[in-house]
Length: 492
Ligand code: AMP
Ligand code: ZN
Image 1 (tube, rainbow, N blue to C red):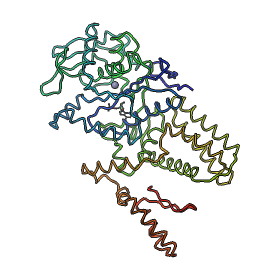
Image 2: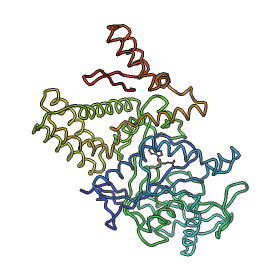
Image 3: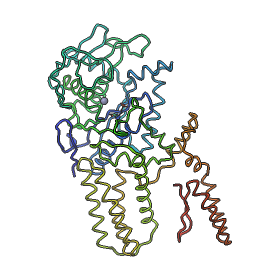
C-alpha cells in the first residue's frame, strides 16, 4: 500500500515513498518557543503525527527531524524584558511544549534540532551562498539573500512575483505576506542582543536559514518530505528552497505538505488575535487529552477546521463509545464459532479504514467504517449472534485504528494530573473547572472505600445509603457500573 499525499510543489496527489527505498526522510518546522503553544500549532503537529503513524502502519519507516526555533525577534525581545538570558527564557517553553506533545500522544521525531546548537552549519551555508554570489553583506553587517539569484523563486506558493523589487530588503522575521524581498540570512548584532562571534561577523541567524541548515545536516541535500502549517508556505518555505537549491544545485525537498489552519469563529487561531486555547487550558476545563487529540485530527489536514467546544464534546462521546466497546469485547465471554456477516464487516472496515488514510490522510473517512463496525457488532452481541472468532476478527481492526488515532487506551489521567500540578505551581487554580476540582478531591482509595461501603449497605438492604453514595460519587464525576462480574467504577 502507498500513501498518496497532496504535494504543494506539484499541485497534485503524489505517491509518498522513500527515494532511497529505506526510510522516509522528512523535516517538519517546529515551534518557536517564546510562549505556550496553542491548539492551532498542535493541530499541525498532530496531523504530522497521523502521517508518520500511518506510514509505519503500512511498513514505511521514517526519519523525522523537527527543529526548535529558540532564537528569534520575539524571544530576544521577551527575554530582554524579563532580564534573563534567552536560554533560560526558552527552557520553560521547550519543557511545556514537550509536555503538551506527550499529553496529546504525539510521537517524538527521531531528531530534535535546536537552532542555537547549529550556528556553525548556518554560517557555513551563508558562506557558501556568498561564494556563489547569492548573498551579500549590508552596511550594518547583516547578510541578505539576493532573490534575483534564484529565478525559480515562487515555484512552491505559485505566487505572481513579477512586481518584485530588485534589491528591496526585509530583516524582520514576520512581515507582509505578499511581498517578496531580499531576506535576511544573518542579522548583525545590536547592542544588548544575544549574538554569536563567527566568520561572517557577530550576529545571529535569520529564521529561514535555520531550517535549511538543519534539514540538510540531518537529512542530506535532497530529502523526501517537508511539512509545516499553511502559513509557512510563503515566504518561509519559499526562502528555504531558494537558499538550499542555490547552494546545492539539487532539489531540496521532493514533496511538500501543508496543514491547513485551525480557525475560531472563522478566523485563524493565533496569539496575535487573542483567540487561542492552550492544551493545558483545555485540560483544566475538564476536557480529556484524548478528546483534544481526536477532535484535532478528525478533520483532515487538507481542510481548515473551525474549532468549537461541540467538537470536543463529540470527540469525548466517540472515545467513550470506542472504549466501552473494547471493554465489552475484552470482558465478554463468547461461544466458539463465527457470524459470517461480522467477519465480512470486519474485513471491509479494515480495508476502508486503510484506503481512506492512503487517500491523502482522510481521517474523517477513515473513522466512519470503524464506528459502523462497532454498531454492527453491538447489535450482534445484543442478539446473541456474536462469537469468539468475531471478537478475534475485530480486535486487530481496533488495533489498526489505534495505531494512528491512539485514543482507545485510556491514558488520560496523567496529562490532567500534570496540568493541575502546573496550575497549582503557577497560581492558576482559578482556571480549573469546578467539576474537575471536585473529581480530583477524591483519591482512588477514597472511591474504593465508598464503593465497598455501598456494597455493604446494599447487602444489609439499606438502599437509601447505597443510592446516596452512588449520587455523591456521580457529582464528583465517578460512575459506578454494576455487572454480573462485580462492581467497577471509573472517572468520567
Ligand atoms: P510557530 O510556533 O508559530 O512557529 O508555529 C508552529 C507550527 O504551527 C507551524 O507549522 C505553524 O504553521 C503552525 N500553526 C500556527 N498557527 C496555526 C493554526 N492556527 N492552525 C494550524 N497550524 C498553525
Ligand atoms: Zn522551518
